[in-house]
Structure formats: C-alpha cells, structure tokens
Image 1: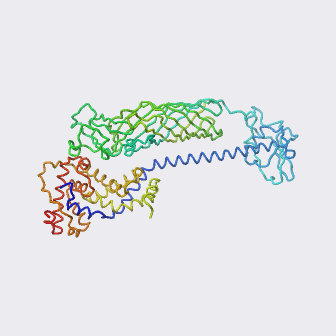
Image 2 (image 1 turned 135 degrees about the vertical axis):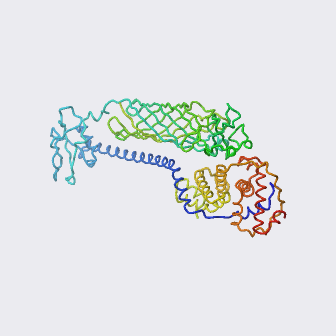
Length: 439
Length: 186
C-alpha cells in the first residue's frame, strides 16, 4: 500500500501543487543583509584584485609615457636648434634638471653660453636666451659648495615663454647623482600578509572529486610571514623567507552533535570517517556524532543510522557543516625582477615554494568557538607550489617601502594521493601587503 | 521578464536587484512549502529565511540541469528537515499498534471540492513526525528508505508514521467534507 498511490496522497499532492502564500513583509529585509555580509569577503577580494590590476596598468602607462617624453626632451636638448648637431658641452646636471621638471618639458634646447655659472634672470620679450642668475643651491654637491659652477647653460626661448616661472632648485642633480643608486643596500626584509582565496583545478575531470567538491566550499584563508631578499643586480633580487599559510574548507551538509561519549561502544577507535577532497577525516573525539544530510557515501561509521538517534539521545546539536583547517609552513625561493625603478617600483615576481604541513584539524564551529572533531589523514606532508605575481613598491623613506603584491600560486602536487582525488590541483590567489626595510 | 539564468548570473555577481528579484519570484511558492512542513507561522518564516540564505550561498553549485524551481524546493525541504531535527525529539514508533491500512482507490473528483487552503490547514494539524513523513513520501515522492536516512529513523518507523498520518488526514478530510467513510473505505 505504501508504495502505491494512495487516494489521500493524491488529494494533497494535487491540491497543494501550485499553492502559493505571500510571505510576511520584512523577511527579505532579514535575508538581504546576511547574504551581503557572507558575499562581502569574495566581493572585496575581487574588487581588490581589479583595483590592483587597474592601478598597475595605469601606473605602467603613465610611467612609459613619461619615459618616452623624457627621451624626446633629452634628444632635443642635445641638438643644436639651428644646425641640429649635438651639443657636447651640455651637462648631465642640466639634462636631468630639464627632464625632471615638467614645467619645462617643452621646446628647450641647450647651447653654449659664456657664463661660467648658472644664473637666473627674468625672461624678457625677444630674449633669445635664458640667463640663470642668483646661483641656486644644488643638491648632491660636496659639502661647502652651494652652486654649480663652470657650467655652460643658456636656453634659447620663444617669446611665448615670457611668463614662465622656472624653479630648478628641487631638480638639480650632479652627474654623480645621475649614476648613483644611493647607498648600496643589498638586503631587504619584509613582513607581508594576505587574505587568500583557494580553489582547485580538476585536471582529469574526476567525477568523484567533482561530486565531493560540490558539497565543499573554500573559506577565505590567510597567509603571511617574513621575506628576506638579496639584490643580485640593480633589477634582480633573490628572495626567500618563512611564511605560514592557513587554508579552510567547509564540509557542507554534515551535521555534528556533541555528548556522544556515553553511547560510544567502540572506544579507542575513530567512530566516523568522512571522505573529503583533501583526504579522509578521522574523528578522534569520542564525544562527537556525525550525520551526512547530503549524500550516502561520504561518511563511513560503525554506527548504523537506524540504530542510534541523536535526537532521542538528546545529543547537543553543534553545526550543519564541518570546518577542515590545514596549516603549512612555506619556504619560498623567489626571483624578483624590477621592471620600473622609481619612487613607485614595479616588480615581476616568480618562483617555487616547498610547503610543510604543520597544522591539521577538523572542527565544528559553535557560536564562534571551535569544537574539535578530528584530523585529516592521507595528506602529503610536503607540497610544492609555483607562484607568479606582480609587486608594487612605494618608497616611504629611503629605506622603508610599502609593498602590494597580487600573487597567484599553483600547487604542483595535490593535497593527497587518494584515488580519484590526486588530480585536484589547488590554486590560491592573494594580495600580499606589508612593509619592507632595506639595509 | 529576465531569464532565470540571467538572474542567477546577477546574483552571483552580488547584484542586489537580481537577488531581490529571485526572492520575489519564488518566495510565495516556497513559503507555501514552509507552511506545509511547519506547525506555526513563526517556524515557517524561519525556514523560509534560512532556506533562502542557503539558496544564495549555494547558487554557484546550481548546474542548470533540471528545473531551478525543483532545486530551490529541495533546499527548502532540507532546511525544514534540519529545523525539524533540531527542534523535535524523534521517538521510535515501531512499537505502535499496527494501523489498519486504508484501501487503495482511484482518485475521486469529489475530493476536489476541498480548497488548497483547507488542505494546508489539515496537513499542518498533523503531529510533526507524521507531517514530516507524509510530506516527504506523498508530496515530495521520497521512498521509505530515503526518508529513513533523512530523518534518521528506521524504514518501519517511516511506514508506521505514514500510516498514522493517512488515517488522521482521512478522518479530518472526511469531517470537513462529509466523505469520511468514502475516503476511508472507498
């Protein structure tokens, strides 16, 4: 009778098939903030990534435009405006003075002048030259010297430049400064931290892995540590250090209950084994009882669902999902190539890392507290990753810089070698930020 | 009217209008499901709220296979089941006296006089464990084996609960329409 269509069943099934009832007003107002709050970390991460990419592209475009403009001006300066022949007596200091000051990035060229000093005078109509009088303090000169002398410097100008105010003081450099990179700081140390999004590629489209992945959700993790870099050349650095990376994985649909110990008749053994994409979770807390609400093949247990009823036994309901947490100590070897060397540096970063498993726990979250459940077995104790990123470095002082490094990491091996799961290659994306100190 | 796949896509991008549109489009039907599985309006409202949060959280897992309506309904039913498990203590009913099985009979159009709102009222008066088994078996189409796993009860218990639910429902429908004898015994 049960398996056949009963009259009363049909009555209710047909009668309620298209039944609709408007929910009370205000339900959506309670749902909306919750989903926005839970989506926020992902939205923020995406937005941060977008901002980083846009900022980088804008910065590169601006910098390359500026470099192109400087190059044109430098070439112009070294040409005689009349003959077009190069002026051999134009000083490096002047070249940088012009190149570094946007106010004069126009139609300047330099020709010889008899004056032994830089002199600034007012520009008057029909002047064909600018004389720089009132010798100006110059940065980078030996102590005691306050002006550049024995320089030939005269600018031919057109009449429409009369009102131009020229301030050379902040941009004058000596040739020594032009070639110098400042102090020879070879080492730098940085402290960096990043929120990390983790997911995985399924290289062989394993059905088992896909099914398990469908009921697992990565949670925002974090990574951070200390990096030590050695400058091999002006642009190339080798970096290593020590990072700690923590990854979280939510196992949805597994209800956990506390207080099972008094009913545990298989003391000393793991009561439940839960298959996950990262390995098999073995419970080692005899007080916990697990039920899988989403599938029949994730949990293996001595306890038959029909033989024990957690509700009847008044076990304490903990949560509807388990959190799987893995922590790794990361030892990277990274190459940093400085593409742009300015106040705002830009680096391309790439390298490999070895990751040692140091933390392995599974827990149920109860009002912010962690209720220990067990650990994941079958994990590879060492993982290897490759990484690629871009580093933006803003100099706060001569030695101190702020770093922002969007970094993509791909795991060369999987978290475990379980059958069907070894094709899962995790990847992470994080935006590292922090301070570095050169010494 | 926007396609459901466009609304889902918008929701996944965090578009608030699409999120609200998805809610408005399905809320009435899903609230009816919540009422059907709950004994009071407050519980139904909680199930609707928690169910929709799960729908939005798991939207990325919807594979556009099968109807979206069926997918959201399953989530809502599972939410009702979780709520039931957390609120109600399950008691074994294996030792309950065997309930006489009503005879099977073809669907009688006379019953069609009952309005949906009447049926909803009747089904919500059932004790929670009977209501849950009846809904899962008769409305959602789960087997006793599946129900026993979902509710963590034995198949025998599921069958007993269903029988008891049917008897109660037939009695109430009968008193509602005067067809009680016909419903029970054909």
